[in-house]
Image (cartoon, rainbow, N blue to C red):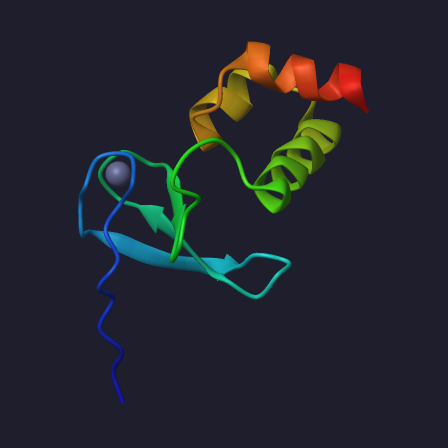
Amino acid sequence: MSVTITVTCRHCGSENLKRFGRAPNGKQKYWCHDCGRQSRDDPAPNGYAPERREEILRAYEERSSLRGLERTFGVSRGTVVSWIKKK
Ligand SMILES: [Zn+2]
């Protein structure tokens, strides 16, 4: 049984997505072949959902690279720094 992926990349609009595990809240995550970024099936319309912020902060704690976070999540390092300061 095959499952058709109907989501599109919220960064570049590509449909060339690959399943990429699940978020802690159970939502399916996808990885975009075209731009290399991650999407999920119902992204927050604007800003960052609390669970996404947690995900990014966790990645920061694991890898400590703001440049890597920018590349992976498309979040500016200034935004991440402001979250870290609030913690
Ligand atoms: Zn993309």
